[in-house]
Length: 355
Figure 1 (cartoon, helix red, strand yellow):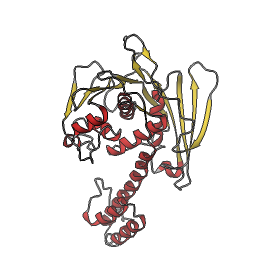
Figure 2 (tube, rainbow, N blue to C red):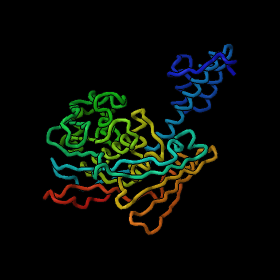
Figure 3 (cartoon, rainbow, N blue to C red):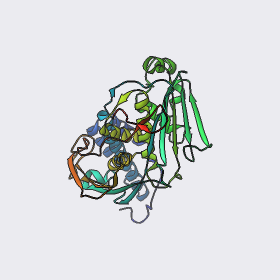
Figure 4 (cartoon, rainbow, N blue to C red):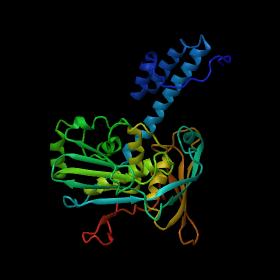
């Protein structure tokens, strides 16, 4: 179409002439947004290079719609109330890594919306240990202390971020900001509200009776492809929920990870997040296969179209189990996550208040 002269163009679709169309799409005015795109497109068809640039902006419009679709997962995050653990009591979460054996990225929008996807995962320990984890506790001082360990739980190498005000949290949606993931967890979990007129310290004291200290760690190298980012996000959410006495189910944690990674502008796929949570609970399972059936191009379900099926193989053999249901209810999702509160005696993990 570009007559061989357009070439490939990378980079953001950020020409200001398309801004009004993008704003309409962001506001949910699909009809108006599409009309504005078409009107602007008419000015970009005279030369091959302009045609390619117009295509980039249409791709950007598609990304806006995909992001809004995945962000709808926030509506399906539901938490309850339970007994709040004592001040200074740690809530630990440790998780295995995840191997993608087949089907990687086939579950990612827009492919998943139109054709479905199928991904096979295996949860693995590294050197006999769960390499990814998080812990959280309430503290007496009304502040957020966020600590990220870069070389495992006991590593002396860490990045510490202290938040005394809401302004300290406002860069939570910038992936490269200090402590961005942990800040995003504090916002997405409802720990604090950036839109509130109350200062951070007042919010923490009124809602939780003190501040929160939150740690994360991974013994895996960055970019290992072992599911570190999504698993860590889920571990952090679970740790915060538990230390503040909030109950949750597996569905809510799956949708929480989807929402969190969109907030961080590192959007993930539906089954990517789902298999991540599966890895949390793969105690006694060897492998897990997730399948997202195609929706025929229609927006079925609530936050993503199609249907969900899981097949899990018990560690000791003895056959398989299958289940299916509409997304994003994830009927037949893995059992509640095997998180635990530390026994006060420090011996064995005590049974937790099931999520």
